[in-house]
Image 1: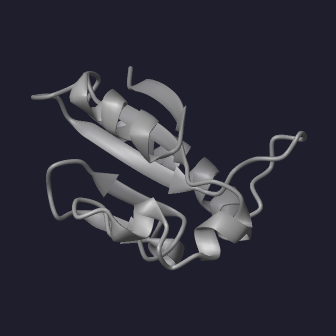
Image 2: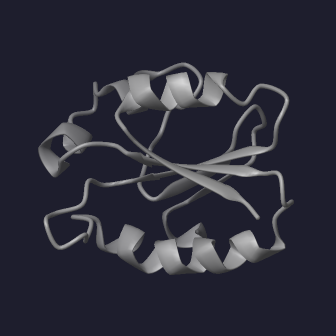
Length: 110
């Protein structure tokens, strides 16, 4: 069964990725969730159940890191860490990546 981990922010994401060197690691980047557990990002709300269904076909020893990119005003800042990080360079949420590879799905592709 795929191990799922939830983190907030880029530093927590990088720390979590470092724990799984040599493993199959996926990362799902979405907007923060409110007190009801819903993201400010409507595309993330739609994508999450699709990704969850897709996990059933993933390798049993894979890791999925759910990473919250912050509140909407932070995400909209073109200079935020997720957009400017050399390894990530996120352009949109949701984004699903396979860590360590160029494979990624963005927005409607998720």
